[in-house]
Length: 338
Image (cartoon, rainbow, N blue to C red; front, side, top):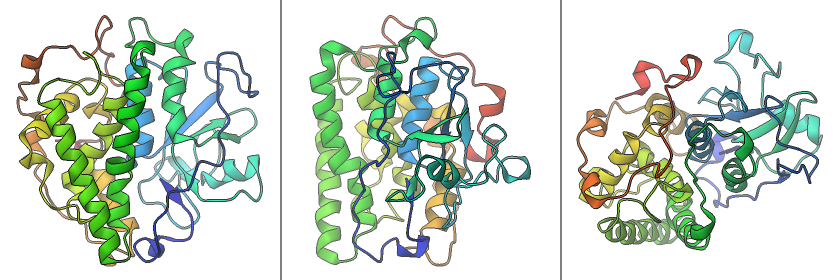
């Protein structure tokens, strides 16, 4: 999620998601100059952002909390970029900066595009390494393996990668990015095309998930993480704020049960902050919601109700195990949980 030309521009200019300008990779062999190294890097996220939430979930499932420390930005960013106003003195305690933009500028003084999360920063130099949200989680799963916790799940199994990639591309185009194209549309035809695409894909996914517990294979994969981060935001923000309102997630029995199954799986729901999500979308996108009023609903209690997806077989972690308790410093505040 990027900060660029000002919050008032949302919904007032044609929407186009920019490519990640900083696409260096952190790899086991360090071929881009950034070797995997415990404690060297800092993952900067917003709990409001679905793209950043992918990295938060992957990091937790793989047990990388100690190896890759995390900074959580304020969900209400301003036109200068994501802010560290949740920390004492408004500075990240490790990087010592007030705005994520400072790490971008340390890497390249006149970088194109906006300041987005997730971002990984090199702590010794204070420079941004990557903001490639499509690649970061794949590398956490495949390049950081020496630092994974014991019995961590394989989120990107080699034998299933072609199918996972196909599913993820369809989900990205029509759902992950589709809700934004609908929500930021500046004309009726543009909106209707995007919104119709969202629901066509959701209906196809519902048919697929009526037969199987997870999107690909018998366990959780990267594909499930990427779909979940949109589904968990659907009723709180995309249904109303982005006008994706043909039906609510809670009105599709299959997708609602699938989303609850994941939410109740350690590593998913325990990273979700509904307070951050709602305040970000409704208060930051002033071009769409100029009053900044944040709705009280929907009721979150349903996320904790039984889902019955176990009957379809499969198991969330396969031969692996669930992650342990959430570190105390990373627990979501009560107002953000069901």
